[in-house]
Image (cartoon, rainbow, N blue to C red):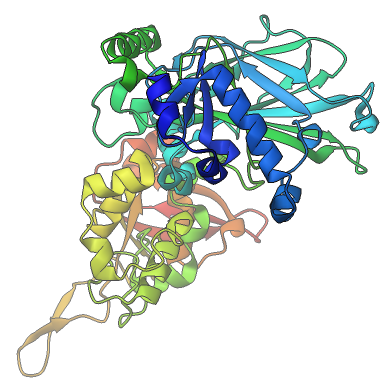
Amino acid sequence: MGTECLGVIQWNELLRFQEADVVFVGSMVQLGCGTRVGTAWARSAEKTHRDVLALPIFKQEDSSLPPENETKNPPFQYVLCAATSPAVKLHDETLTYLNQGQSYEVRMLDNRKPGELPELNNKMVKSIVRVVFHDRRLQYTEHQQLEGWKWNRPGDRLLDIDIPMSVGIVEPKTHPSQLNAAEFLWDLNKRTSVFVQVHCISTEFTPRKHGGEKGVPFRIQFDTFALGDSGDYTEHLHSASCQIKVFKPKGADRKQKTDREKMEKRTAQEKEKYQPSYDTTILSECSPWPDNAYTSTNQAATLSFASTPLSTYTTSSVLDSDSSSPNHQADPGSHVNSEQLSPTASIQDTQKWLLKNRFSSYTRLFSNFSGSDLLKLTRDDLVQICGPADGIRLFNALKSRSVRPRLTVYVCKESLQESPLLDRHSTNENGEHCLSSGLHVYHALYLEELTAAELIRKMACVCSIPLGTINQVYRQGPTGIHILLSDQMVYNFPDESCFLISTVKDESGEGLHLILK
């Protein structure tokens, strides 16, 4: 092919070729137009090309090209000891398959030139390794996605350091609030290798489980910091990452074998469009991971989603509703009632509803949603957007699925002037039945925790008695005996029990005893 091709290439046409148009392929050279010629001829053409560019008319263009000796190398290099996939096209980023829970070595290399960053000599640096999402869409909802993963895998971490196998690392740390990150110190003068384990698999974050091949890609990223003036490792030095997919144990090996067999079936011309598989993966430079990275909610915050805080039950809310129901009451004319979101709610009302119902972390995500837009989302939609835990909770809140109380108790404060045995009905002068002035009005107490403390607190609210003044609470038993109220007694109350509450001053005269009759 060489001689025929050379016959049609004119030297003046060579002026149109740029340096990027010459690609060396073994002993042949491929020009940008797809023509392959001998290496010797290409070297001659390259020399002529440089001579032509040295002419005065090309000097301005040539001056913009950086000298070869000015090529900037990164100060550090991280090498993941896992093979890259052979099924990746030439200009695409490499892809590496990993097995879930398997330890993989990452070599930490000091790549500085002599005299570069001398302030780091004989110093330690800190590196933070993370597993993060590759897709922008999932990066935007990272917190919700990882919270959902934590809900399904309680006690597990997304990423760990295999400390016994690691070499040269100092003070490795994992934070309970950052399940996808770990950090360690390392000495630039010593050989350092950190072994990492990724415990999440790519299919755990797909709406439908197709298997490993359809899973979402992750990134393993290293951010390295030097000691700053504040005494903490806050001075950013370098960041690099690579694209990975994580499979169930041995799944990565099967996927690598499948890709290799597919490539072997391709023609030689098709193979030229793909990268070869390398034994190791070199992480490429990238921007540092943002400071507001994923932080898991603490245990207290998680529990607050499942139980109503004590401050919910205030005297004013009880008196306004004549009940101690834990549901917040909004203005009658408002569209943001905590019980139900109206389809006619505006974007602003929808934002208020999300805040009132403890979905503040999703206000930005739903910043353009009206009440109608939010109500149109299905349960699967919300689970995909917010994760299983908050997705189901939001769906139930939108459909007004209130939690049934464990026990309902009706109480009434006994009047000193009226007897509880007074007739509830009387007859007026026209002979019509009407309510007696001695009617006792009961309040409904809804208990979600079957404890004496919750019952006493709610009784204090409906009776307008300061909680601190209540000394003891008794239940009147057979023959008028007084039985001390306990958690076990409350647990055994029949549902919808009725009690009259009478008050008796204690021995000091400053406190009160309550008696349930």
